[in-house]
Image (tube, rainbow, N blue to C red; front, side):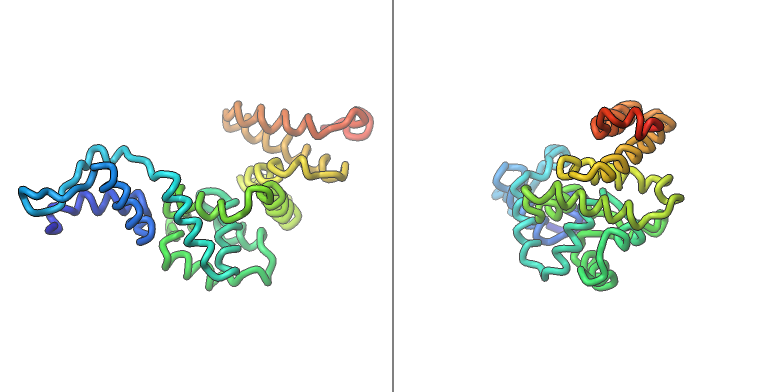
Length: 239
């Protein structure tokens, strides 16, 4: 197809796949299989249904395929992708620095490789790294075996908590810390850990109330309450 005829399709495919060639090929194949992209024998060229393609979701098998391809990357690159996927749809370098240990992977190598591969891009305005799309983040997330995900959430949340300043714990980083630690709350055994997390949930709940995010506030506050034992009325009355 000449550029004038396929520009709208190529722009749409790029927005849905992040321009990653593995995603592009898989997505185009699925479009052909579903009759949204076909060869027009009469006109002797490829044709497509742009309206139906626009509302089409990336299928789960595309995510599975992407996870399979990511699993073949070098170990340190895989670990970086896994860790970054637990930090949300976008994050800054400082947060990733706090979440990793020095020997796990090299920052510069990881970011340059991730951007070159199309997994991430750097937003100059916000100064944050952003996943190309939700499916790529999900594919990286699924590199972590399901049985180990909660413990990985707890590990990342705990690292961020222990390595953050009091000022940082009052920023939006608080939500990333609490959301991760809450996923691994059932793995906590020490009362001190539970009290620390209960306090963080209280802060997150209050911060959510201030932002009128009442459903989130309820979730944080109820989680915090569930972490407190009967003795807290005497030992942790402020909570």
